[in-house]
Image (cartoon, rainbow, N blue to C red; front, side, top):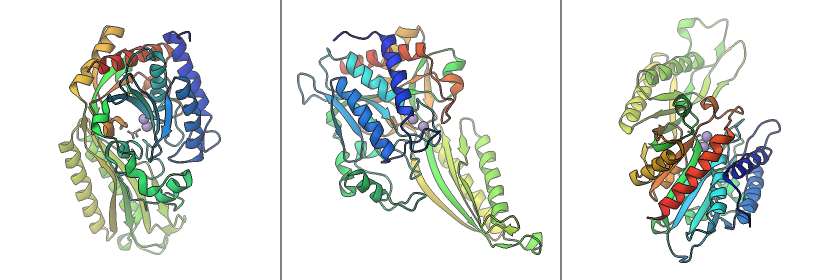
Length: 409
Ligand code: HGY
Ligand code: MN
Ligand code: MN
């Protein structure tokens, strides 16, 4: 089989990303949620590409798609490379997808290497359906789903329902767990989703770790009332209270270097133009480079919310949807990536990821690292997400060389 050159491989990655972008739950935007029919269709297409790369493909008990090739000693620990094919709402083409497709190209290019290699498409990195991500990589690393099987989505359907509907068994998710001795190392190539590489005029970078991330759902309850007859001082206006809380979220995060906080979802009841709102439900995603700062911010948000609620006679409920500590990648893996970046670009840059990745989970299981590829204006979680073909070509070489180096043990 004639080996493809790197730019042909990069073109194939971009073409395949285009193919996957047409597999969606919603016409006119890219959306593939956990265990959706669109996920099944995307996995079926990726399975074919993995098989063409000489991999034997299976789907594990959590829905992860795993392509594997054994080296001459099939029991030797495998190098794992992957990312995710699920998406956020109205997603771009490359978040997660680029890393899975690049892994398939690496498997194809490394056929002659005597190594046990696995390429994985994790089932749910984003958490779009249930608010908590890593529903594929967390069981892969720990056997734990991380959320109750009874958690329900916005249709009122449970995790267990979707697992069964997809053809899996909710009681067997723990069987996805891998033994540490099976995995020699994990490497993930992912778009940076931020501005650093572009500002540094670099195509690739070595990721040192992942910021701490907490996701919450906040319910503020007051009393519905007539918009005309209730004096301002007698209201228990849930929306006015929630707005004061939202302002505090932005103020608290803005005070600390590297901290961020986002209110992404907001629902007001009953939503009448002449009715004082009696309930607001909103979400917070807040992150910080280290756990101490994350905890400080979390405590600050909770304290301010309690004060605002009691001063306004409002009821407050705060649910933690997910909470993941900051992750430091394995120094040896980071150095291998850095060396590979230097070889290809003459420079090596270390950078922390403020975005979450499946690598955050796999780092619990095996020596883990990541490669970032520059994306245009750092835009992501947006259909305008874009990757330059020359950067893609270079990133594929960095990945392949780093995987081969990782293998040397
Ligand atoms: O939210 C994140 O950081 C990732 O895209 N799931
Ligand atoms: Mn994402
Ligand atoms: Mn991602």
